[in-house]
Image (cartoon, rainbow, N blue to C red; front, side, top):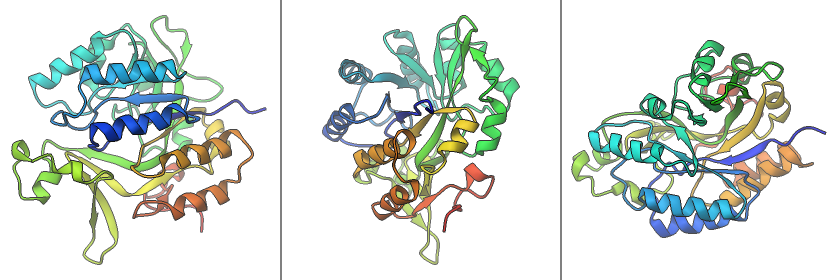
Length: 309
């Protein structure tokens, strides 16, 4: 039998109210997800949850049998951001996912996860991070499955961890709007003609980001505060065989505001059961956000293309 492909619920990338977050993770606790990544990774101004709140939630999820990882921000802009990152990495109750290079120094010598925004595009680069203690690697979203298999091959994985003897696990961003870029400028505030420091937290009004369309009305990008995402959602539910061939042992599913439990169930049925990938993908497309489903990057094509008709 094929080994289980573990399901990871990625961090919520949007600004959701506290109650919405608590209710969401209550549903995740009863889902087939193996791992849950918690924390604010986009904007430090978002204040519905503090570190102590994330830790309390992490303990609850761990008590339900979930592996919990705490993620650091992908773009740090101030001394206060650095202090919060140091507080996060100083706790030793849960493993940390490094959102950028600033977290690597504080995590060196401990087991940690390399987040998707740490630039690792070759085996030597992965080996360099493995020497610091990395035990898991979330591949950058623009890498093809073929390229991922060359960086960390199934038959010859890079060894990492504090003792340099742990085969590094490869995690693939398999569902959700693709995180493309971060900027010091807040695009949501700019959309509302507001200064970043006086944004009014308008992004909380857009639980799946603010869709940006072309002049012809075609979905193009999604604005999420200082983050830019694709309009379409990556969906690699039909790539189980290619994933295993590339050494992928985990898939990351990025939360959306509606029907995410159905997304988790679909991936579980296909990757670890007898579900039909085409049927499940059709069902996902029917409930999908504007922009549709794509898989171009996985096949060395433009990201907004798809391989099925």
